[in-house]
Length: 623
Image (cartoon, rainbow, N blue to C red; front, side):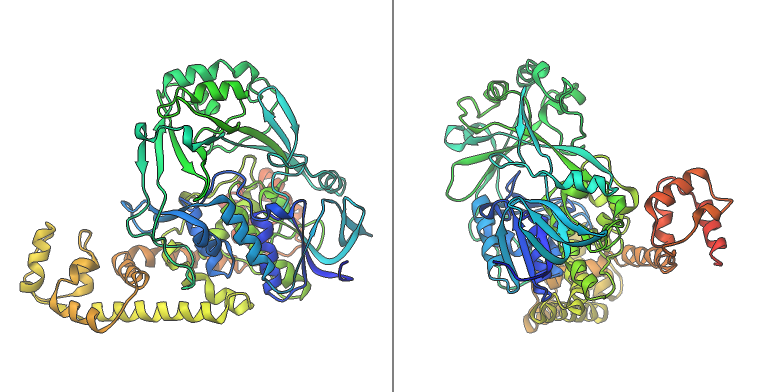
């Protein structure tokens, strides 16, 4: 039935589990993916979309590292948008609407075509531990499966409890049972757990909606894609989303059910996502607002099912239905299923190392919502890192760790293990202090060489990255050396209301002006001739333009990152005795003993540890 022993067992087949299994198997490790339902591998439990603010950057980082999420997204997209184009490139974030069924189907197909990966459908009820050593897992059927390491990616299934109004029942997702046993075992071993909540809106019949009353939200006219690989292609046709609004009438209708709402009557005690609140939470917290946006998102090419983004709720189904009928365009709405809230167990992420291995049990890794995050992208990135490090550990190689100036994934993991979280953690560009370095356009250049050195990113991926770097560098070199005479460039400058020049000026100096783009410069004969003789992709042009326009900001962030990385090199021994450091504050001592930071830099980011405490530590360590 099974091999005698696997290198890695991944528990859970969601976004974290799928990326973990793919990474482990692609590194050559014998891998088993155990999930409660093989039909829901890679399932989009909530909205049918990937990417968005900061999340789009994470998807591109997963792709640059050799993960699958971007490829699956491109192959199942129904709409593509680049968000925040009115802002600087650090804020540009790709987002795709997806065909939900196709997304899961492609995930399964890609995993099934991955060598070294086996599958088994069953619930894992406990870890197999003997003499405090991890041996493998024990399934609901009582099967004991050996492995050298285990990655837990249980999502919302650990003791999951679904709420719809005054009704509740066990479940990890609509129509699927909860997973039991693991939380209780881990707590008995000394792990600290907690409860979190998330929610989802009703799904409705698109044939019952009046789209003429809504605002159409089409995709980009020239859609791009997520993956850096040439195998995936931009969309040629797209489905539109739509936007409408709630009203005071809708809010009043929703309030009639507050006394039956598990959020307000005390049945839900856990904390939900701050930045994706339920509709009842919105009208309670922001009572001064007369309306809230609702995004009407199709679930796929060949279905009439529609996702009502912005209307997450756990109110009774009759209240949901009556309130939604008051929304413009929803007067005759028909429900496919009501919205619901779900409570589930998570484990405080300060109990993890940077590798996502637990501090209490060797060779046990956590990834995804079990660590207190929310979102497919956050989960997938953790799964990828956990899968890589599970293999690195059993091969006695150093952990693969991304720093805060290398990737949003590095920011995510550092935030989790250093600060912890008491509410579902979601990534934003504002969380990254080096976001000018962590753009969506350069994730391949930042991360593919690192992944290639590991043996995960393919040679084809590496060559594509090198070609892009070489071509964009060549274009930058040309623009730095190509002079523009006043008579040729001034008409363009005048049309853009930019100051004219009186003597010849290098092209890069002109391009660095706010209102001037590379597209405008190509109207000049000399530059036009260069582009005719040399073909550049859009990504290569964008890369060159960004490097020139934002050179000062980029160099400043690199300098700041270098300062931080000097402290990253100062390692703190695992057995460091903080209690012997007499001058350290009581709060700092408590936090340092809890987190046990690996470096002085990590220690400096812990809430409650002051610069003076860091100075004392450095002195004590002989620095």
